[in-house]
Amino acid sequence: MNEVVINLDNCAREPIHIPGTIQPHGLLFVLREPDLHILQVSENVEVMLGIPAENLLDQPLSKFLNAAQIAKVQFALDSVDPRDNNPVELGLSTAKGDAQLDGFVHRHDGFSYLEFEPASLAEGARFLDFYRKITHLTTALHAASSLPSLLSEATGGISAMTGFDRVMIYRFAESGEGEVIAETAVGSMDPYLGLWYPASDIPEQARRLYVLNPIRNVVDVDFTPVPVVPVINPESNRPVDMTYSGLRSVSPIHCEYLRNMGVAASMSVSILLDGKLWGLIACHHRSAHYVPYETRKACTFIGQVLSGEIARRQQMDEASYQSHTTATQAKLMQLMAGSSNPLLGLVNSSPTLLDLIPAEGAAVVQGDKAHLLGDTPGYDDVMDLVSLLKQNDVPTTFVTKSLKNHFPLTDRMRDTASGLIALQVERDPATYALFFRPEVTQTVFWGGNPEKPVEASEDGFRLSPRKSFEAWKEEVSGQSLPWRKNEILAAQELRNLITVVAFGK
Image (cartoon, rainbow, N blue to C red):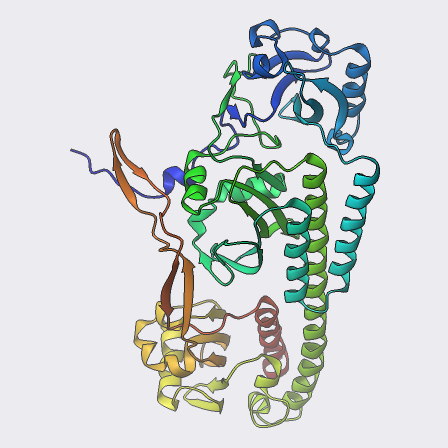
């Protein structure tokens, strides 16, 4: 009998871009171009328009749109990016006659998509009021004096625009976990500020979709999914790809996750830096909550402004650090060039290695001698560490924030050397420049136990999102503060300088 291994792989591989269903507050049409024939349609078209789905399939769009409406759709599709023309104001009335629908177009996977949602009413004075809110918020974002104030302005402004009960900024760590770093909440919403969430909460395929489509809206987690018919596109022989669809259905696992949080509606907006997912603006509501397209579009714009402001601040910090690094490197070169033993010039004069890279201790090792600076492991421990590095043939620039994870025997050094940058200048005799950071013991508060339970069901085992989101505490030890990318780059540049000045290479 084969052993059944239960893990998160099935969640991570869930094809969320091809669910075959949509949320029920709108309609979806998949069209063939250039004749705009209807290849697929959501099954709720009969409920909303009074036309059975089978009466529309393989029919021209003129089956239910007039010539003027079709001209608007065609005009939008003829643009470089059809989405720039959304909403396409078609003024389509529902079968019940109590609401109107606007159209939204995009092109993907060789087909045109026409979606309908309740028409936005942001006109006249309401539009001007809405415009003022956006202008005020973007001005406040540009004027924010710090990253915390920037993020606080963003959550507060989006909360006011959208009416969500809770708006958070969620930042991803390099290892995939996420931390809530800003929050605006109203009423009795539980505070999540400062909580961490495991990488499995937002699987990799969901992150890819957030890069491609920057906004995601779930109107009601208790919705009944509406099938798209036929299930398989008759021209592509594939399910319809809803990567860019605003109506795309939602994974049942995600809906259960939201219910367990006490959330009935949600919206997420991507924060992208250099084309990568830096974080999310995550919005929650305790009851079903429809956000009109114009408001969603404004939130997407705010997400772009926020991305730009975060990037600008990071670039300023990096430019300032780079200026300091360049000046310090030039002085270190002079000290090495003017010393009979160039490497000692890095620890015996001013500036030193510790002025180049923020660390509590540094060392230069030459053969059987070590020269220590600042708070470092003992002399013998440093020599033992160099032997370990050499024996294990680590990269010439070795970087870690948890040395004991690579070499368990070094656990005795963690008070001074949990974090290490080791620069191998020469292998024989062993010549190294070392930077040390001590252990930083910290308490991490998770949004509930990060381990997803596996529960028995009638048809076997299934993954179930955790039930409780109360803070779950974990003590983290044996790690230093992480080394920043620009610090690692400065270390690599230092190694190159040493090999040139000290060894003429």
